[in-house]
Image (cartoon, rainbow, N blue to C red; front, side):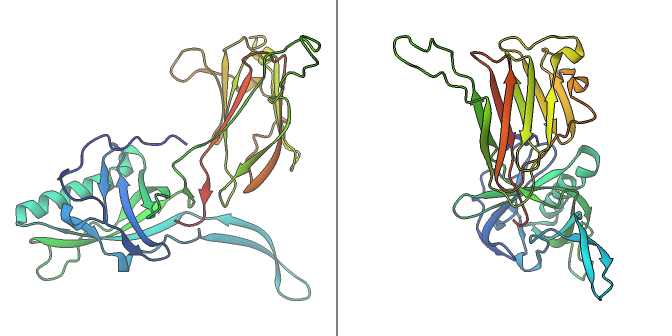
Length: 324
């Protein structure tokens, strides 16, 4: 999943104090920030900027909601057939103030635009940072809440927006990407100058650890030379193979790359254009399964036929978590 660089645009009052850790329900002491679709970083737990979070009203940071599909059991009760994670709603009360009505209104309008623009330009990112520097973020869309309290005196120099932020993916992600790199070693004569076995780390079985709570859908980058690529999840038996000859290209030459995305499913040959050439036809459909990595250790097999010096596989993913 592409991450938004931060900060891209300086938020209002850049000389204000740094974010202040506050106790958040289901999280503990932490700081919170919001990055809007334009890349502007908005601290949410710093009163000195003219707005701050009313932590007592925050909710929706715990485990993802699920819908359960069950079958009645003839002896009573039911059996769980399937659990489907549902979109998450986060409630976030934000108090906005100013030294004058004009200053307050300016801040209110800027914040309202920062959140509502998600409905036109794509999601923003709500991020929670622990005192030890550990971070988790979630993509959010504005749903409602920037109406103000509507009580006597509100809206003059201060008011509170009780935001509801809708999350199509209910899981939190670690913004720090995990990279697994495997590369073929240069071949060498077996008896020169003494018995030697060349590295073939890219070929055969290996183990990939997913430190998150749930399945992740990785992105694979394959660097040639290679004539056919097969990736197998040994634990599940799921696999997919990529044959460049199926798109009339022939074997990957040294330095040529193909990127395989598992969510959304996509295969792109890096031909120098912005998006790359569509190589979905190179997969072994209908048998191909662009599989994910379960939580914990995953036994996988990387196999590159026709590999040589420079052949490499890079596996990238961001761990996903139930809670903030």
